Image (cartoon, rainbow, N blue to C red; front, side, top):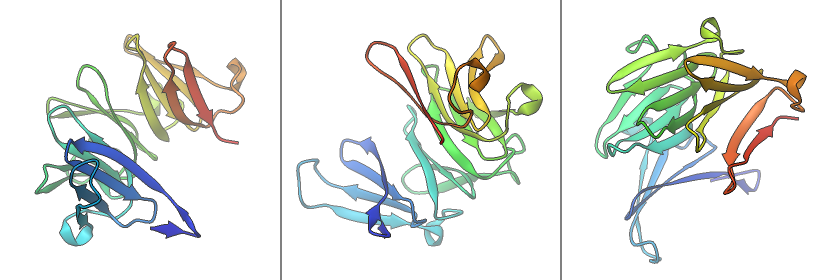
Length: 200
């Protein structure tokens, strides 16, 4: 689990008894099962041998319906605890890229999917819809997505910060005061201030 001595871990709580961990080395999905305060646990690892399309997992989220969603370089994966279901460009035309880089569920239950070279995709009630440069995004390289407390959706791209409001995209770049156009992360503090992590 180390890469040059440094450990890279992404952690998400799946349920009260489950902890899901993925590392940055392409070693698949790891689940630890046991009480939170216990030193004893059962470890299970899932890789391509168990049904994953690819072993690098860039994003994990559990949606309100209980499914675990995984963003990989081989497509979007839905996991019900037993079976991996793959959504990729071959079986899901609205997905424009298999390189999934970000996952976010908004308060309305929409799952937003950021991808490298494929723009932004929304999954709601079993239907996928895609948004690319042709729809007003500044780039098809989309990473993180975040909904602020006012319900506005923010999208991180490599060519600016995008605000999705009332059906249209508004892009902010270095021309608007950002120190760099490549947006890597988005967060909101207790006072409602938005924070953006930038490249370089």
